Picture (spheres, rainbow, N blue to C red):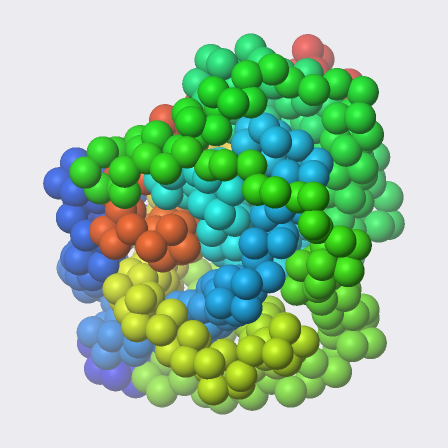
Amino acid sequence: MTPLEVFTPDVNPLARQWLSALAAALPIVAMLVTLAVLRWKAHHAGMFSWAVALLVALGAFGMPLHMALSVSVQGFLYGLFPIVWILLCAIWMYQVTVISGRFDDLRSTFFLISEDPRVLGLLIVFCFGGLLEALAGFGAPVAITAAMLIAVGFSPIRSAITALLANTVPVAFGAVGLPVLMAARVGGFGDDVLAVSPITGRLTALLCLVIPFLLLAVMDRHNGIREVWPLGLAVGASFGVTKWIVSATPLYNLTEIFASVVTIIVAIGFLKLWTPSGGLGARQAVAVPMVPGVEPAAVPGTVPNTADLTGRRIAMALVPYGLVIVVFGIAALPSVKAILKSTDVSFAWPGLAEMTAADGSAAAHQVFTLGWASTPGILLALVAIVVGLIYRVPLAEVFREFWRNVVKMRYAMLTIGSVVALAYVMGDSGQTLALGMFIAGAGAIYPFLAPVLGWLGVYVTGSDTSANILFSGLQSSVGGQIGAGSPLGVESMRALLVGSNAAGGVVGKMISPQSLAIAAAAIGVSGSESIILRRVLKWSFILLAFLCVLAGLMSTPALSWLLP
């Protein structure tokens, strides 16, 4: 094949869809085996799995070598910017609060709400983390909330697992609704997002009734559930009910913002009326290392002295997070968003001019767009610098802290870059669609499997938005084929499958290699990605099965009444 010959991905190059899908699954299997079984360091596992994806692209899918290498370079750079850049700035902002000494006041402020670390854990990762996901996304919620849990006395691995598990239900409407917006557009619904968003909202709302109890179990095993279940129920129900309502309105893009704020208010009000038992024992339990020898020895959290905590000190401690909300809220305004978007720099990427998508249209990666001002990284960097100025930290020290984080994250950068390169190669060569086509061949039982595609897409790409772009068209097509003979009809079946794709993706987020690298970097335990994966993998499978059953039953008279 000459460099000038057009390459169009073949989703069934081996003539049997199951065989093509088996070949396409090799990079995913390689990642899971090297991380979870062989316990390789994440950057080694990422580079090896990328190499497997490259070989499959060349050998089985016929992708030209120069295109495979070119798209790999583009994927690696996209992994660094914006993804690593966002993560780096999120941790930088947090570290500025630490070196200023103001984070100690924030920690004390949390203890004004409750002295029970399990309560604080729910408020930090589920409520505040949901708000961060709504505004920023791209791993920032995991990075910030995991570090905050350590500050209130959690062991590092427990902090990472808790943050990853919580960063599920807000994902489908994160980044101000972008994932579900793209699901509707690519799924053939145009700007009629309300055809899809209520379904995704209801599936993830039901998930809200499960996640808080899993968080309590991770934090303090059966004691956490037994002693704090009333608050877990209140938090899950308020978040879920708000999602259910708002996702079906024109304000769908603000679903997670409303859900997070309402839930924080409900939780604080609930704690005025009820106090959990076992707080003292919980402070010791959450500090116990989950993996002795890898984590530091247990240092049970102590309740700080809040007697001299003035209103001004509390307000100053909340400044960084208030700024995040204000800055990202302004950036989400359509007019401001358009201005920021207008600064994007786009150019043709070398070597990909003759590469097309599976439908024959120009491949998305033919053009590279550098969104230097329209991505959350620059906004987080601005907040970090402004926080440094407000806290009177010398600018030289602020930027030294940035460089220290760059050095600490060098292996996370390699991991994320190689994983995104893998995702680009799998997507542009046809491997990801080959897997999707195989799953889509399930026929009438397909609605029970629809969330699997979203889960798979997020595992590979690390993004629910990307998974929806990848698979929503396929989901809609399958819905058109099987909908006519179903109780739902064609249009409702299409909407159910596209909405299920977005919902399924949220439970793939916690095992995405990108997310694992972000969590490991945030807790400062080098090489802990494989340990974290083994701890969260079962939860991802259990939650996926839960969504599959829900989506499948919603396609039948048993639960079709849940559809809008």
